[in-house]
Structures are given as C-alpha cells and as structure tokens.
Amino acid sequence: MKNKLKRRVWLEIDLGRISSNYGKISASVRPAAVLAVLKANAYGLGVLPYARALARTDCAGFGVAEPFEAMQLREWQEEEHQGNTIPVQILSSVIPDEIPAMVEAGVTLPVIDVRTAKLISAAAARLHCAAKVHFKLDTGMGRLGIRAEEAPQVIREVKALPNLDCEGMFTHCPMAYDPENTFTEDQIETFLAILRDVAKSGIHFRKVHMAASDAINNFPRCAKPPFTHVRTGINLHGSFDPFGRKALKVESVLTLKTRIAQVRDLPAGTTLGYGRTWCLSKRTRVATISAGYADGLPLALTNRGHVLVNGVPCPIIGRISMDYTTVDVSHAPKAKPGDEVVCLGEANGHRITPDDWASLKGTHAYDIICSFGNRVERVYV
Image (cartoon, rainbow, N blue to C red; front, side):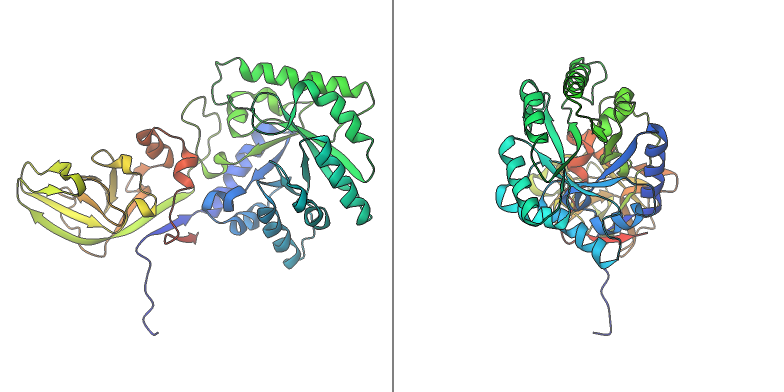
C-alpha cells in the first residue's frame, strides 16, 4: 500500500533518559554495581531497546523472571556477538524441566532449595561446565526461596555439590518502600547473620545483593559493603513507589500520545459516556480522543484526570471507554481532529507522570507501566 497509516496511540520511550537514569542510580550506589531488572519485556516497554541502551553503560547484569525472558536476551547477545559479557540472571525460580536449557545457555540461576541445586549440578556435569548460581533467601517476603533459619545448612550442603559456581546470595524486601518500618532493618540483620555464619565454613560470595529500587532510595545501607550489587527496575523508568523517599533524581522516560477523533460543541444537559457519569452544566466544547482503557488509560481517571491538548491541561469528563475518552477542550479552542494529545508526558511546561496516574488509581507506577495495550506502538527516541 502506498499510504501508510499512522497509529492512533503511541508510546515514546526516551532511551537517552534510560541511560541517564541508570547513570544517576549507578553513581548513587558506588562502589556497588547495578543489575537492571528487565522482566516482563522491560515492563512491557521493549526489552531489546532497553538492553541495547544499557549495554553502553557499566550495567553489571540483566535480571529477568523466567527462562523465555532469559533466552531472549541471550539470543540477542549471541546475534550481536556480545557473548555473555553482561550476565543474564533469573531472579525468581527455575522449574526442573527448564534447567538443562538454562545451564546450556549460561544463564545465572537461583537456588531455592537443595533439590533444585542438585538438578542444576547434574545438568552442568552432563555439559562439562560449571553453572553460575545465586542462593535466593526468603528473609520475610514469603514467596520463594530458602527460609532464613534453614539457609546456613542448605548453603553448606549445596556448596559441596560439583559443577556449581556459587557466586552469589540475595534476598528481596516486601517493606522497603516504607523507611519508617523496622521490618527491612530486621531483614538486613538476618541476611548479614547468615553471611557471617557461612563465612565460618570458608564460604564467601562475589555477589551479594538485597536492595531493589525501594531500598536504594530508603535503605542506602543495602548498597554498602558487604553488599556488592543492587537491582533496579522502576527507577530506570523514572518512577517511584508512592510511599517513601524519592532520593534519586530520575526522570520519567515515557510519553503516551494519541489523536483527536472529533470535536463538538455540546449543549447544557448533555450526558457523557457509559453510566452517564458527567452532565454538562453549560454549552461545552468537547473532544473525543482515540485512547481508552485498552491502551492503558486507567478507569480511575474518569472525571478526575486530565490530558494535554495543544499544551493545555484539559479535564477528562465522562467515563473512560475501551477505545475513546471525552475531554473538555474549552481552554484549547483551536483543537481539531488529528491533533496530538499528550496523555502521559510533558508539553508547554505541564507534566503528567505514571506516578500521577498511580496516585489517582490508588496503586503504584509498575501497574501503570505494565498496562499499555498491544495496539499502542512503542517508539524509541
């Protein structure tokens, strides 16, 4: 076809800001190194463009949740002749039938129990290699890993197995977003006690990590020795948990745009949208924009949020639909069909961030970032 259609909704992702945010995080935690968490396709934003941008930094590793994510990065590394210069690490769990392929691919694996460790050891023996593993400790998350009270015994038993390079130990924090809560400090003490215990048996680790984005901001102790690494996900995107400190001066990397489908002057008494949740009190200039909750606009913005039309904040009126949203453009009188609309991002000195949407929705920025629909085109700037 000669005439190429332009997407009605697109997400601009600033890779320069990704690198800049990474640099700010890295500088704040030195001498600790930084693992970039790129699970779930970099939270739906595109793992390979992220990986390419981060490969030009001093990124110490890529963290993922499961084997298909790990293989996507390893295959990309092989295709671009990078080898395994930036380690790819599964941070959650590995299921028995996934282990042989992961060992063969050189992925760093989590040890969550002795049984898993024995399977990894056996797979590595068959391949005549040493598999890199990190002990995943459950110090209070209650989700996955070796329970803290069992950890010293398990670590000693696994360390004796052949064909394992037990290079790391890590844990995860459920309360690190709250600097006033003492639970994270208790976790730190529990974790350090386990390190000291196994050290009596001559067991030491090259990589020791506990802090994710929340702990980097709220518990800087987790980035100091004996901790050697930190993990960051949400801060890479320039967002934070709604609670706690925002110590890092990172910037949002996202701009979500759409276009106006129609502009009408509607009389007083007109009701808008499903449920007729908005009734015009006077004659009003209303624009219908080509984005809805299928594209990632939270329903919680209904009658509360706003978008930027020609750089002017314009309130959302009426319930957000799957594909469309109605907006009061009385203060943007030149608005017309086809005009760009900024749903998230900056224009004319005004800014709307994922954190703003998360606040209205009563959630956190992860929820917002992971919710952009499949028809939203990702554009890398």
